[in-house]
Length: 113
Length: 112
Image 1 (cartoon, helix red, strand yellow):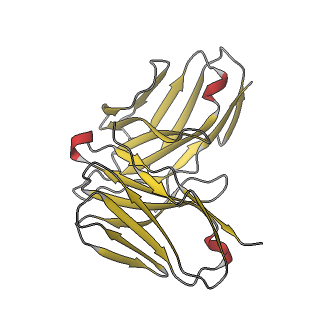
Image 2 (tube, each protein chain N blue to C red):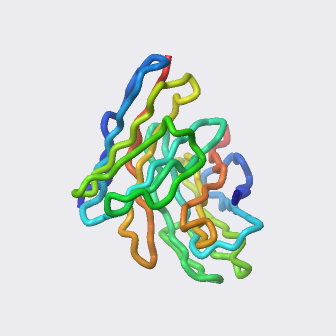
C-alpha cells in the first residue's frame, strides 16, 4: 500500500498570503489528522476529519481551516499568514478502528517571510 | 490540557549501548504510541501499545504500557548509528476526544 502523501513538500509564502496544503491518506483510511510541528512548540494537533466531517479540533485560530473530500483526501488552509506560521505541517491517516493507529506523511515545510 | 512529559530531552549513544526513554502524564491513556522522526521527514510508527502492562518488541526496540496507564517507556538495545533521530511518545485518551497528545521528543545523538 502506498503511504500518506503530502503536497507540496516545500513552500515559501509572504505575510498576509494564504496557503492550501494537500494530504492523500493511505488507501482505505477514512480519518485524516493535521499537526503543526515547530522547534519551540513540538507537535501540536490542528484538527481531524472523518468521513468529510471535522471530528476534533485543536487550539488554533480560525485562520486555520480544513476539509475532507469524499475520497478521504484532505486539505488544510491557512489564511492571512503570519511569520509564526512557519512550520512543518504533518498529515496523519488512520483506519479509525478500535485500535486506531496514525501513520504520518512526510510533511509540508512552510516558510513565511 | 493534557501533557506528556518525555525524558530525557536528549541523549548521546555509543554504538552497542542500551538506551531508554520514558513518558509520563498525570492523565490516564488508553493507547500509547512510539514514533521516530528523521530530519525532514514525518514521524514513523515504531510500536503501538493498547493494554496496561503490555510489553511489545519490534526488533531491538521494546516498549511497555505502564500499569497505572499514565506512563510508557521505550528501550533500544545494542544501539547502532542509524538509531539517531528524534523519538516521540504519543498517547490517546477518551477524555481528550481520542486526540493524540505528543511528548516533547527525545533527541538521540551519537557520542563524538
